[in-house]
Amino acid sequence: MLKIENLNVYYGAIHALKGLDINVNEGEIVTLIGANGAGKTSTLRAVSGLIPIKSGTVTYDGKPITNMAANEIVKLGMSHVPEGRRVFANLTVMENLELGAYLRKDKNGIKKDFEMVFEKFPRLKERVAQRAGTLSGGEQQMLAMGRALMIRPKLILMDEPSMGLAPLIVKDIFSIIKEVNDSGFFYSNSSYFFYFTFIFYNIH
Ligand SMILES: Nc1ncnc2c1ncn2[C@@H]1O[C@H](COP(=O)(O)OP(=O)(O)O)[C@@H](O)[C@H]1O
Ligand SMILES: [Mg+2]
Image: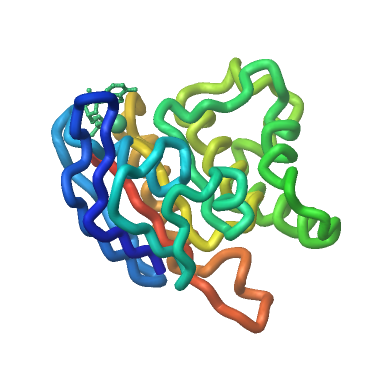
């Protein structure tokens, strides 16, 4: 589903990714583990079109997406949960989730997906009107995941989903990720049954 071949990324003179190859199959949860500065974030950002790729190729769902614009890549069903969650602090939980569905026009589908997100994350349901900046770190991570799921993605890239969270919350987050991946989540009602594929970085 995602194939990264001989990827090279530079920041000026710094050669951050050197000939990276990764293959992610449908239904798989793939984890990248590496020290600080190893290039995990750069890998994700290059795949999602957020930083330029100097050479090498990225193929997603059979299509070449190397250096494609980030907004076009999202439209293909890939969502990125960035390091540090990056929820919109001044917006409510509901507004953050609505932004996840920004590109969609299928009103009924969106409604159903809200219900499914709230089923997976009951804490978010209790807090729909709360401003995201006042959520705990774990709740913000759940919101960032919920927002990513509202895109109705086939592939989710998660950058350090456990960073800065208490061990019990980390356990919760990872079990929800596994659950979502096992269930196929949003696609269970459609004739095509896709599994989600996740990439995680730095599981502590
Ligand atoms: N915006 C940037 N400008 C210059 N160098 C960067 C930038 N972002 C990352 N790097 C460098 O690229 C390398 C990989 O970093 P990164 O992908 O953030 O690693 P990780 O996520 O594994 O900690 C590091 O050497 C880092 O200093
Ligand atoms: Mg990083």
